[in-house]
Length: 207
Image (tube, rainbow, N blue to C red; front, side, top):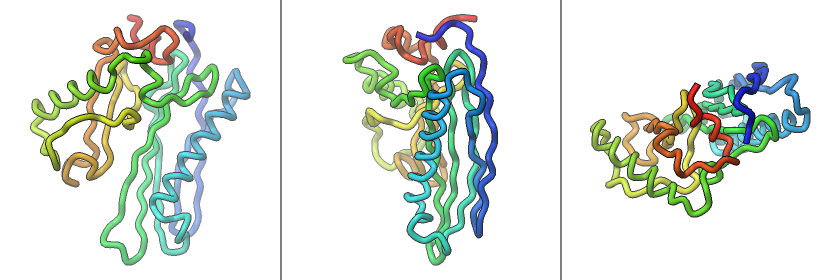
């Protein structure tokens, strides 16, 4: 468990450019733990490369346009949560595609956590979160491509403002017009599922 107060990490913006290519990427610098810093930066670089492959840039670098940026969602209490937004358009395609991927780190170790790793084993987090998402879909009048059943166990998420924000990619559950459906869930409503060792446990502490 992280201490109740941990200094935010220093984040440097790195601009990567090339023909039809412009990316603004976060880089952790001057972190207290050098090994954790390397681990986080490697994970960010790996995620970017995975997105570039999915958008066709790796296979067709001369005919694919890439633009991207990032957003820091949380940088406090030993937690860094960052969202990477990358748009890709390949010549002769009907239209481009935008991806959002996020990484949430324990800054003391540099480990990136999947959604399931935030919760206690056997906690039933998938059903709890799915029920909340289903209720929000109804309350907000969100049109889905099919009746919503469940999140994936490794559903995309980030942490912001003491909320776990579960989200879906374009076309994953909704028509394009709804963009990226995002569902903020207060960490307090999930508190009984979060073990002391979870990197989001400090977010459940008032103050």
